[in-house]
Amino acid sequence: MQIDRPNVSLIAGVDEVGRGPLVGDVVTAAVILDPTKPIAGLADSKKLTDKKRQALAVEIKEKALCYAYGRCSPTEIDELNILHATMLAMSRAVEALSTEPEFVFIDGNRLPKLTMAAQAVVKGDSLVAEISAASILAKVARDDEMLELDKRHPEYGFAGHKGYPTKAHFAALEQYGAIEEHRKSFKPVQRVLAQANGEG
Image 1: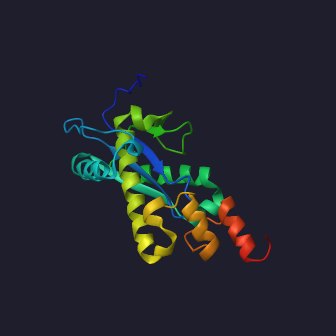
Image 2: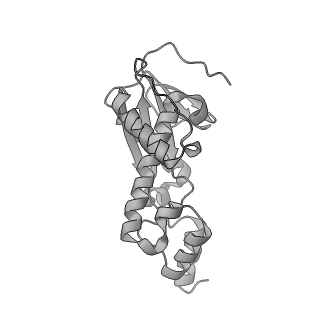
């Protein structure tokens, strides 16, 4: 699929990581690449090995014209719902860029509130280099946060499942209950909290 790129020089790509997990922030990144410093191997972060993602993240940070992160906390996710929280986190990433883009490509089928022209691209992390770069930065950042959370709460196994709803995560939730970083509005977490309160 061919993406029509606007005839401007400052194009940002934006992607999110962490809509599906039961714990932690939803993390977004915005990247404006430098056309004079191409980066080989950019792809959807989910299709890359952890080692490759880590190496590309370093290269993106070195070569990009600018990049920034946005996020929404579990509390904000519970208040807004995950879709609205993701859109807010994307807006925050774009606003945090040190250089304002002239145009923004967003991964997915919805656009967050932005002050400049933008286009949503389904499967954009495989089709638009700037979105691929953003997906890699967001994924590495969130995975690193899950490793830190794992150190504080090793019994949940966050280093392995990264907070996603796996059998191991469900078992830990039932055994140990929810921690502050869990998203209380997500059904599996609600269920465990209800059982803990004697409502199950």
